[in-house]
Length: 271
Ligand code: NAD
Image (cartoon, rainbow, N blue to C red; front, side, top):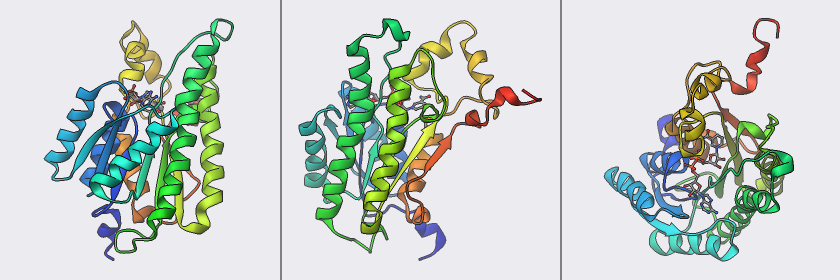
């Protein structure tokens, strides 16, 4: 196989959660650009999911919107059912859906905690379990990929950097790190690769109010050695790479896509 072919996802089927906007949409579009057909999961915005579908169809690939809550077992199973019914067995699963519900520790309600853990961590578990079951049932397709299946989580720099006033979010992403690594260890011998991307500050709805408040952008840029906030496509391209055979010897790893945020920029110049 020529090296450029190794990046191709032609003939493969992907599911992406939380793909009606932001990083999830960029992942879905970049997977399609590489040749995959995509089931576009959304929670609330059917309109957003349809826009993602239109972007994928404009690339000459197939896509369908599938409503569902990643924290609900039946919805996750239905996402894979719909993808398989429309396009055939699933080769690539991207667990991207996530949310924040920020509060100081002593003001954080149990609902705030459960909502974020339920989507970010339990959603990741349900996606991993379903993806591995489906990969096993599908069997190898060496004509499209060396791996039996590819599972990619959207984590965060906050799987490594503690985050005051966001303890539910940081705990969910820290949990996701060891979920990803443990699943990777459990299924590697079957030919299933499991990895994560850890975005830094990417311009999406999740941090729009932070970026738009007075001084918010300057405060954010101080944390980013590379000097710019990321675009969703910065992350989507890395996810497409991790899904491809160009990354065939990578499993159990987190790729930080953060302009250097985890380099402790506060220590530049002796700290
Ligand atoms: P976003 O708010 O645009 O996207 C999050 C998506 O998840 C939305 O489409 C939302 O509808 C969906 N979602 C939320 N709860 C869901 C549920 N229960 N079931 C299905 N879908 C659900 O923000 P984003 O920045 O694109 O976030 C995507 C992922 O990237 C999240 O996991 C987030 O934690 C992670 N992330 C983002 C940044 C950033 O700076 N934007 C940084 C690090 C990590």
